[in-house]
Each structure stands twice: as C-alpha cells, then as structure tokens.
Image (tube, rainbow, N blue to C red; front, side, top):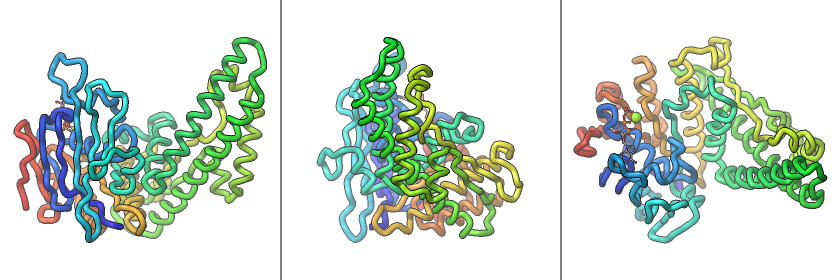
Length: 386
Ligand SMILES: Nc1ncnc2c1ncn2[C@@H]1O[C@H](COP(=O)(O)OP(=O)(O)OP(=O)(O)O)[C@@H](O)[C@H]1O
Ligand SMILES: [Mg+2]
C-alpha cells in the first residue's frame, strides 16, 4: 500500500457548500479564489478524513451548513474515493446524520467503523495560517502540532494520548476532591491510575522522541535546499529521557514515582504539574543560528513547511501505510518566488498529492501543468487546467 491520493471529493451541506464535487484524477490540486470563497473549507473537509477535529479544531455543529440566523448546522457529509494500489478505489465518508449530533460517523466501503480506521486509507497532514503563530503561542499549540506529525507516522499515538488524558482527568478529580475535603484520596485507585498514566506517558514520550530523531535525520539528509534547515529539540523532561535512550521501563517507573510524589502539590494546584502533557518542541534556524521565535514570519513559515515536507517524505517511504496527502493553506503567499518554485519542485519530486490554496492563480504558476487548478467561487468548484 502506498498510493492514497484522493480521486474524488464530495461535500454535502459542509460549511459554505450545499453540494460540491471535485474529481482530481489523483493529481495535486491548487485552489484559488476570493476571500471567503470556500478554499479553506475544502481543505478542512479533507482534514476530517482523519480522526480528530480537523484543521480548524472545529466542533461538529460548526461545520454543518448554516444559513444566517440558524443556530444549529445541518447534517453534513464529506465523501471521498481514495486510490488503492491495483485495486478499486476505497470509498470513505464522514459526517453527521442529525444537526446536533455529538459524534461523527465514519464509513469505509459503506460500513460504519471507528474513526481510527481512517488512518488505514488516508493520512492528511496540514499547514495552516493558524500555525504561523506557533512560536509565539503557548507550549500546548506546539505540542498539538508535533503530536499531529507523530500521529501521521504512528496512529497508535492518538490512543495513547487519549488513555493518558482520561487517566489524568480521573486522577485530578480524586486529588482535588481529597484536597477540598482535607482527606486522603483512595490510594489503591490512585496507584492504578498512575500506573496507567506512567505507561501511556512513557509511550507518548518515546513516540515523540522517535519521530523527532527520524525527522531530524530526514532534514539533515536532504541537505542543501531553499528551505531553511531546522534543528529540533524536545524540551520536556520525559521526552529528553527518551531521547537520551533511557529504557522504557525506567521512564515508566520514574514517571510513576514522580506522579506519586506530586499528589499533594497537584491536588492543591488543581492541575498536574509533571508529565509528558507539559512537553514542548523547540526549533532552531541553523543558518541564522537563532531560535525560530526570533526569525521573520516568512522564515518561520519556511521552517515549519520544511518540517511538514520532511515528515511527508518520510511517510511516503513507509510501505505498509498510505501515502500522506499534504494540505497547505495559504502557504504560497508567504513564500518568495524562489521558494515558491522550490515548493512546486519539491511537491512534484515527492510524488505525493497536495492541496494548496491562495487568492491568486498566479501564485501557482510553477505548478501549472503539474497540478490541477480549480477556481473556487459562489458557483462552486471549476477546474481551469487539465
Ligand atoms: N457552517 C457554515 N455554514 C455556512 N457558511 C459557512 C459556515 N462556516 C463558514 N462559512 C462560510 O464560509 C466562508 C469562508 O470560507 P473559507 O474560510 O473556506 O474561505 P477562503 O476561501 O479560505 O477565504 P480566505 O481567502 O479569506 O482564506 C465564509 O464566508 C463563512 O461565512
Ligand atoms: Mg482561507
């Protein structure tokens, strides 16, 4: 399994689209049109073909089409056909059947399946304008960004993160209640929760460390390119241990011990002060010899873009997994001409399907003949080049 390009996409009552269909022939696509035309909405629809809340982190009720004044969105659907090597395309769909539904349904070949199964067929990874602020934001944003990259390579990462969050919520409930009552919490129950946390936490830290190492090797190995070289580090205690090669069982045991020791402090603070949920990612611009936060907006964009492309390149070599589909929202507009040309060359060389957006068709001159151009307007999606 390697190819996983989207051959077609059909949106029904999704955001601004009443109904729209796009046939790509498996090619990359650049979408252009005025502000508010629906370009990002289309990328968002694709980003929902992976578990989670998509590239805007939106709630399910937000994405259903709403007329002005309507409080609840309509039932909506995103359907796609994904290329599968030498076989008939796989039909994938997601959506809600009722306006206020709490969960979305995922179907593969007409059968309802858990959202995690999407990762068997499509792997969207994205870069959006919201990530321009990545280096100015709190650590949680960088963690989320990096965890997405980890997840794209190791789908089990999401399950570990969920297990960790769930156990942490239960632990904090026990601790804060005990703190408020001035009593001691149920030690047996706490021990069990902390054992779960330590295991899931050590798995998270190791997965992040693995991805970081592989990404750094990929970036270093790709050498001289028009995109700035990045040096990456994970600054969280647990990730650092994993990077230093501390054994899994040792990280797990130390995390369990740290959690047990932190009980009174966490209970009083009302939040957990140690663990991989506090980890952070630091990015350094090698040529400039500066942390990314001190680089220009365009340089930061190019740094993050390089990271996303490196991850895409890595994943495209994984035989057992579908190729990533790259979603680049408004990326071209930030790049100078040299880098725009380089991006087009790189996407072509990667042989991966990408969806790019921009307001002007001319931003994609370098992709002409190499990707499908689509005009986005009130009238819908109109292909302009073959
Ligand atoms: N649930 C919804 N129902 C109907 N319309 C919606 C809904 N959510 C968003 N919209 C509309 O979608 C439009 C925005 O689309 P989108 O963000 O895709 O634009 P864009 O083409 O990316 O524009 P820009 O160039 O400014 O980024 C807005 O006009 C917004 O009002
Ligand atoms: Mg947009």
